[in-house]
Image (tube, rainbow, N blue to C red; front, side):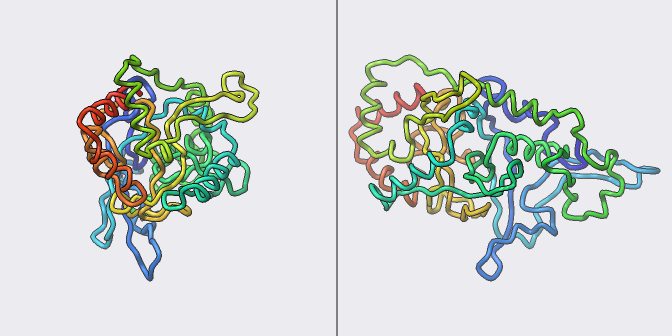
Length: 333
């Protein structure tokens, strides 16, 4: 573990609604703009803060690993809550081309709200792939998502991420690292990938008359153009994932969310871009939006901006009964 880290287990930040869910735990990212380009400030340990350290280590306790902090030079500071992991094996099994097709279709039918893919380095294949996981779609596969979390959240190196994080950017401090080299010798990150691959989607709540009416309102308000109700996996050797329709209520694309963006850039995702959050599992969540600013679903809708502004305005124009039905539908997911 460590020497700097955020949690001592995956479950410590993924527990809401069951092991693998969301939580109200935050991580902090930072950076700055320099000459029109985003600078993750790697020399200061950016862009992700590791909020814990293992303490003293080395001969005669010569190193003291403490929590990192945001450097005063940072001009962008963002907090993000934990994303739920339910059903992600299905998302992983959707071919890249399907997301590219969705983006292409949106550009043709509704260019003002069209999303885009984030093409990122795939460390497993050595090629560029479509990002699917994380608030900015910064990871292309569950395998990479898992290994990324092992390194950046727990400080555990693996074959995909063999280099330790330098505490607060000071690589000289790694001289006292208790376990240099690759720490995940037993393939734990791969086992975690298997767990996520077959972690079931969240179950729906009761489907009442209000829920059915609310789904019609959801469609009419334009919410479904980004929160796409249905996707389908491609061919898979795993029967449960083989050409299966599922209902995440997300297009898993990046959209310009205006003031709702967090300013952080990752891959081709700009500061205002955020991945469409899947809505399945809403009924076991307690905080909403990437930074958890909303404690109620209606507040989350009212925070939509940029390409989501029109749906927000449509929500405000709904009658009281229509709003009630829409919220009943969302609360059933």
